[in-house]
Length: 286
Length: 94
Image (cartoon, rainbow over all chains, first blue to last red; front, side):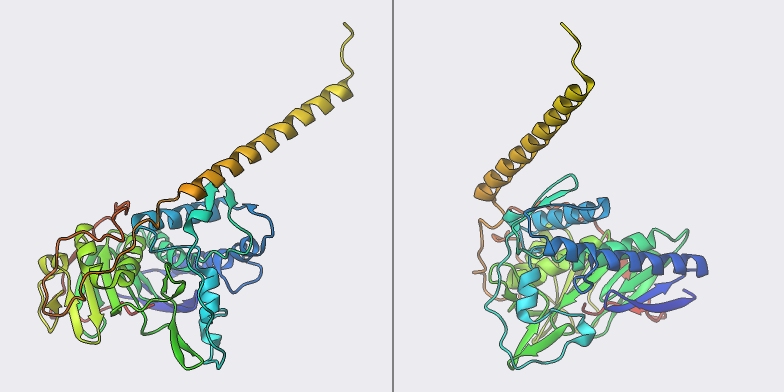
């Protein structure tokens, strides 16, 4: 594939393959609009406005409502594991600014703020949630933006950002710790605790919060890679199977999705991955 | 019966509109309250399975923690990468 271009958005590098100048400009503009709407770190974003609102009922834009509806659907698909109500938990862990600006901190992390999925409701463009709850839609927004960016292509191409990739027409994607696969159509996402991590009072923190404890997950996995029809599906499934820990591979098999799991012990794959992508190098079945 | 002054008609219409809006909010609040009391998403939580190891086989047993999952994920079209082609991009942890 020719013409690979890169730019920064949403706190990560965006890599675009196969786009001409017009499509690239449209993709950059799309990422900027979504970041402006959903950034936790921009005081004038719509998400920040919703999170600051003192009343329980807030009117939101159509884009916000669509995205929150999809985040709630992701929660339903994962039994509440991928939870959009963990904004306070992220802040308590110390993730309260753009990741590039974060530094290790002597202050201890907070005690945790478990998810309150049942307390958020969406009716049309009206959101009802308790004052003080902070939504975090970052994961679903990034994945959906990648999918929507790919939709701007007339022909083959790919869009990648922060571990998530969507491709059409075939792209060879490198995997963590080596190996590669060919993604003809769909999405591939890797979630894990090895990159977006920091320390609070000497304790390692990361951004994948267990909604039951409201603290960074203590999953046995360090990285989970999943392929699915869309980047959004792959991202949601990768997060859920990471948070599920030992149950992650079997759960992904139930969804008929291939997953590749990395831990301190090495790299393992689930049965679906083994069937679709025969193991060549090093990886064992999980 | 004399016709109602237009200003009163307007006031009554506005009052009816406000009442309707208040009623909608009330119904919404009651709905939310009931939903809060009955939300099922976090009903089951168990991670009692033994840790998987690199040499263990995938079990087809269901995940209790996600037993209420809605499912509905679609599949990608993926194949092994040809040896002769270098990756265009990599998937790294976000």
